[in-house]
Amino acid sequence: MSPPRDDLSGTDPRHDAALTRLDRLAWLLDSALRIPGTPIRFGADAAANLLPGIGPLVSKGVSAWLILEAARLGVPRPVLLRMAGHVALDAAIGAVPLLGWTADIFLRANRRNMALLRAHLARPPPDAGDPPNHVAPTPRSPG
Image 1 (cartoon, rainbow, N blue to C red):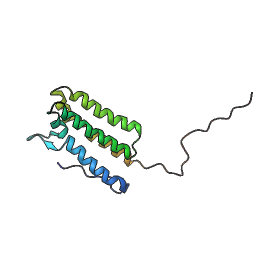
Image 2: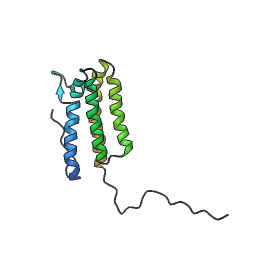
Image 3: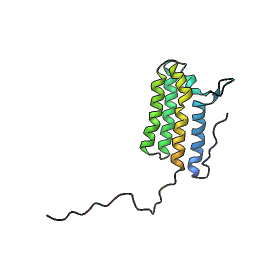
Image 4: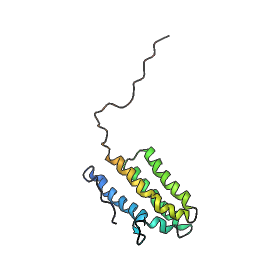
């Protein structure tokens, strides 16, 4: 299985290169390898957890970089927090031997984060001519 193709091409040329790079990274971390004879895929994140201490630290650092790149692409704070939650859950479960390796195979935090990033970028930007979404304060009457 190869990395996913960028299906948002043409939406914003500035995002195309970043999406392609981040998609490849998420694929490498979560799905690059397949267990022979099964449809089960895993990536460098699961393999890194075989190296106690440094492996999980490096893989979660790369996952954090993916979130930082999402922030640079304008993803709002609630979505970034959800992305961070995926990585935090992966790290918490990953701290438990065997369970952590299994979780890395099935949770795929980085692929989930890419789905959130793509969903955000697929939304049309707010039109600059639209009025802001707020209600003007009601004037107070004297006395």
